[in-house]
Length: 269
Ligand SMILES: [Zn+2]
Image (cartoon, rainbow, N blue to C red; front, side):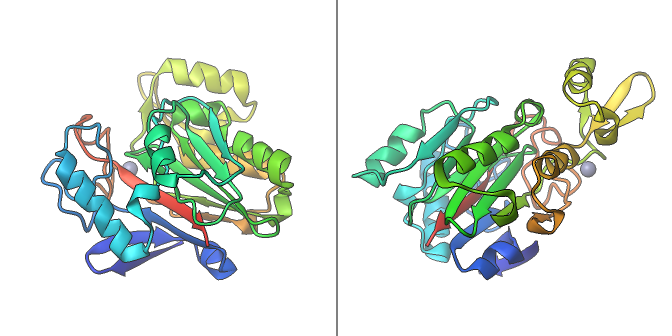
């Protein structure tokens, strides 16, 4: 994974995804937009209190830099669930479809159609991208602690396998920045679920004093990918904590819930 600049805009991309020549993709940071504090500056979420006109302009900036029609970007009404939107035929009117998907309560998208940009919004949660190099299909998921413990990454892979024939060896995965175990304190309710779902749950947490636990979304999502047989060499990570690097990323925890959302986007070309 490497950081890149396009004018003022700073983003991350996976070298392996880029080398495939099959996709345009970016994990955006908060740099390069026009939103004012506390949404400064590249906020892509209309629902967090930022001015609509400003968010709209940020989407236009993205279009200028990446050549992605901003009316066509499919986002969801992310709900910390594990619902997956499968787009296996090109919508007749992509602009109208993009308006509909904004209200769909789901947390991941997959498609094998060209020129359909699929995107996830995050501030601490982990964005995960998938690319099947052989069958030319993509996926993107929003993995907060709820999505992660319910194995949303594995579910996206399974749906790609079912619909497009994706195999572990052909599947590239990229993990975007998320809150790290340095900063992500969780309560007993999360630990109880981890214990139930993962026999190796101790690999993904640090036990601090006074029954306080810190949890790594990144490590658990990585484990889930290797568990289903995706080779480690297929997986890219940034290993950047959104809270420690709050000047580059929106952080819901660090900014006490009042902040913008970063956009992660991928499109088959
Ligand atoms: Zn941190």
